[in-house]
Length: 344
Image (spheres, rainbow, N blue to C red):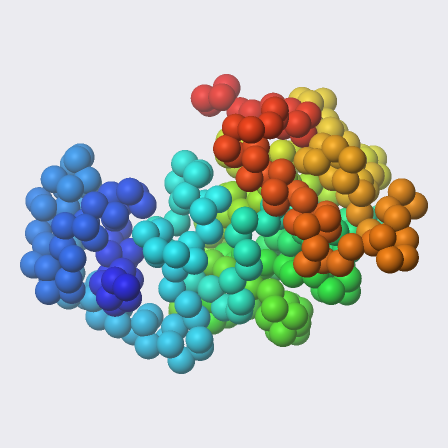
């Protein structure tokens, strides 16, 4: 495994994109090599002029050492782009994180996941919709991904936990902190249930306004589909919708939350072609026609019902279907409705 201090030092280089950091990492190979790296070398490796670059590799290495000690003390795993454990879904997106920091158990990344996101100030109907949809996803063996924010995100995590499912919280700060503070208990419940807290920000990194739009690309990037439950026109959840389209993820809006100010963003997405769904069944039908969630009247009861580890369980069948789709062995189901092209 690559020296984690070296990984953290390369990650701290300002002005470099993820792929440029990979080239630097491959060139320097050791921390000593990193300390000898000159600005002109970094520019040559990046293949472009680096403007306003203040170059202090010793300071970067010292910060990296501090972050490494903090990660070890808090049992935070460092997941570089280059090594196993890094979510393969994120390698597909335009700007994947060079490093990820994880607390908790890493899920099986081959299982299709569902993002459930929305406004921090939902209505009662929005809260119920998020909770119920996440509960249904957990019953079907589908991991639920959200941002641990107040409102819709929190309800999605709670619904998944109450159904005994696995949920991933993508943070907009370092993995050693929880924001909002009121969700510390929820975060601990996620970890105790075998879930995961994931972020691209090193331990000690606080909350910054620009962190949250960047976080949203990870939420959508981890998932097969994204459901926007409630979102006013200026909601950050609409950025997650934009990322979903750019990344080729399935985008849905909750049909029970289209009214009022909190439904304005959903109505706009629906007018552009995003399908409105009222329960998980509609998503399952798009992803794997004929699949029904447990508890549905069309699922056989008694001894014919298969357990979650059996190949007939919905989560397993969805994973197999997705694998076949990625290998080109099955036509694309109707769930992929539209994708943003260019800047238009």
